[in-house]
Length: 157
Length: 83
Image (tube, chains in turn purple, yellow):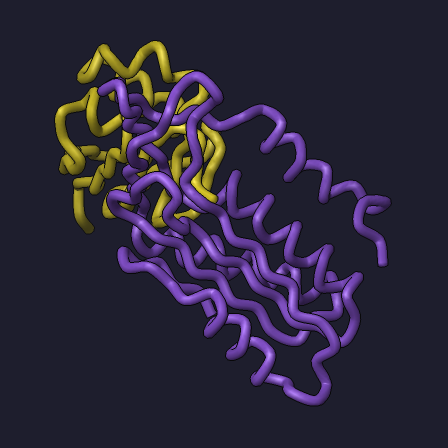
């Protein structure tokens, strides 16, 4: 299931729900949480404003997860991504995957967050504590990392 | 058949254009790259971003050779930065 929402999420509850989907058959639940952090060591972040393209955003994430489910042997997935104004230290995104075995869960989870970062239409506006504001630019290494998943050697089970 | 397209701008592009939504009259199918030239003529501030802009037609990514048809929803934005 894919959710884009303004309010915070309870990661513990999301993990429990993922486990319960196939309780007994699930041997591994992998979860990733992204947080609002300082922009860099010299610039303290006060908040992030996240904008998105409703509809396209959910569909892109759904496609990414379906691709992961067809490539790796996973049982269930869950993505929650927040939008709106988020303060320093707040949770931004949850990606969770369940599987019989850890290897498949690690790879599928890593692929989902990598692809989400370069495909799902979200944009971050950084508000620093010194008052500076700017739109965050996509990092080249993020695009390269997503592209690397197309390499059939990468992430092979 | 509608002779308009529904244009959506997001994030920095919306800020520069000064709007998030425009209805554009088009009388025939047009290539994305040709339409982008028109966007830059209308909103010259977008020019410096033009090479890296992403385009989605009806909520699917397309390249700059794709064709925009009347009635389409066309979105213009910078490379995404979620996660």
